Image (cartoon, rainbow, N blue to C red; front, side, top):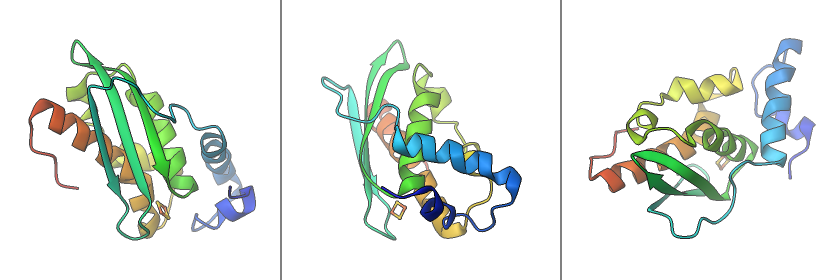
Length: 144
Ligand code: FES
């Protein structure tokens, strides 16, 4: 597990007002919400970050068009895990069509400014969630 100080290296600049972002990210990384296996899921999807090979899978139960329960699993850096955790919180209970409209910017805004390389880490779980929803709905997955 990465330390607070190792974590800070993932950010380009850490002015004082950025510390709140780092602390929030560290909290999600150390205590990830919605991490684990989901039995009897209606869909599962997984993908990897091509830059590092880290992998995230997401499984969900669907009820009345909503993501009734979602869990993620896999391995990744602190930003990847924290981002997955934040996405589980955000998307639980959300209509699938609405979840498909979650934008990259919505996810990236959780991190303040991160380097372009790290955006792949932050966006992996969103990509996986959209892949899963699209396969469930029989839609074409959006381009990254
Ligand atoms: Fe692998 Fe971030 S370094 S997901």
